[in-house]
Image 1 (tube, helix red, strand yellow):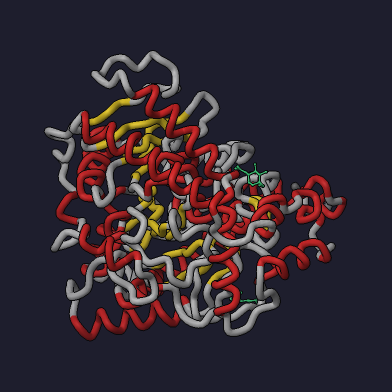
Image 2: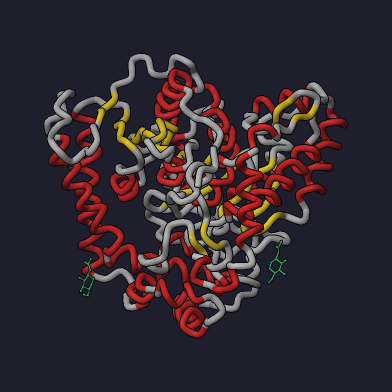
Length: 501
Ligand SMILES: *[C@@H]1O[C@H](CO)[C@@H](O)[C@H](O)[C@H]1NC(C)=O
Ligand SMILES: *[C@@H]1O[C@H](CO)[C@@H](O)[C@H](O)[C@H]1NC(C)=O
C-alpha cells in the first residue's frame, strides 16, 4: 500500500532496520526469572503469578514493548490502552491481597480486542474507519463487561479489515484507514486474511497473551488459519454481540483468537452467557455446560468421535473415503448458499438496519447513519485508499429498504440450505463434526449460526500457515473443543512466526 505514496521512501531504511531486527529475533528471548513470556499460555502465566516469578505489570510492559517494536511492520494494533498499566497494578494488588493461587483464568491477563468491539474508556471503537473516530459508545460491549469482571486487562484495540470487510469488496483483507495494511507475521507478503486480522496477527506474534475477534462469515476462522493460531467461532448467541459494530445479527458472533486451544477455552469461558442487551444470548445460554468448557480439554478428546473428513478441495469427488456420498451435493448446495449470502439482499438489508441502530445509539458520533458514512467516505480525501477501494457494499446496503418479500425469500432459502444441507449431513451420518482444510467451510457455518474451531495444521512451501477447521451443530462447542484439543495435543504444529519477507 505504502508504495503508492511518495512519502514512503524516507521510511524505507527504518523498515529495513526493523526487518533486520526481526531477523535476529530468535536470540532476543525475554525472560523474567527464567520464564519465557513469548509463547507462554495462560496456564504458564498464572503459574508464574502464583510462584511470584511474574507480575501483570511486567507482563503488560513486555507486550507494550513488543507492540512498539513490531507493530510498525505488522500493523496489528490500532491503539494501546493508556489504562493498561493501571489495570495491571490493580490485578497485582488484588493478587497480593488475596494470596497466590486465589485468582485464575483471565485475571491479570492482557487481551486485545478487535476494533469493532466497544469499550467505554479512553480507547476509540471505530471498525478501523476514520468516520467513527471520536464517536463515544454508550457502554462497554457485553463481552467486555464479562472480561472486566474476570479481571482481564484490556491492552488495546487490534486492527481489522475496515468495517469488517463490509464496506467494499475491493478493499484488501487486513487493511483499514486507521490501521493500515496488517501483515502476516510468518510471510510478510502473504495475506493475513480478515476481517479479524489484527487479533490473529497479535496473538501469533506475541504482541499479547490472547485476543478477541468477531465473525460474520470466516472472519475468525480464516485469519486464525493464515496466522497459525487457534480461533473459536461460537454458536451465534453464545457470546453477546451487544456493543459490537454489527454486520448482521443473524450471523455475527464474538470469539477468541489465541495461540493454543486451552487459551481459547479460558477466554470462551469468560465471555459466554446471558446478556440483557442481546436477546440471542437468552436462547443460546442453554448450550453452556455447567462447569464451563475447561473440563473438555482432554488429551484423549478425539476418542470415539465421528468426523466427516472433507478432502481438499472439498467440492471435487475425490473424497469418497468415508460413507458420505451425499457430501458433494450438500456442500455444493450450501456453498452456493454461502456465495449468495454476501451479495444477498437479506444480509445487505440486515446490515443497514443493524448499523443504523448502532450509530443512533452512540453518545457522540461524527456519523449517525449508513448514509452519513457513505457521504463521509465520498468527501474524505486524506486517505487515497478509501477512494480507490470504493464502497460498493455500503452503497448496495443503502439501496435496500428493510426486510421485504425479496429478503424474506432469501432468508427462507438460507434456512432451507441449513436444514437440508449441513444439519442433515451431520445428523444422518451421526457425525460429531465436519473436518475441512483452511476455513473453506465458513459460509456453511455462517448461514446456520453454527460453531467452528480452527487449529494450526501446517505451513506451505513458502512458510505460509494453514489451519484445519472443525465445524459442528449449534451448541456443539464442548465436542469441538475435545476434538480440537485432541488434535492439537497430538500434532503440536504451531511454531512462533518467522517474519520471512
Ligand atoms: C482516540 O481518538 C482520539 C482522536 O479522536 C485520540 O486523540 C485519542 O488518543 C484516541 N485514544 C487512544 C487511546 O488512542
Ligand atoms: C438484490 O436485489 C436487486 C434489485 O431487485 C437485484 O437486481 C439483485 O439481483 C439482488 N441480488 C441478489 C444477490 O439477489
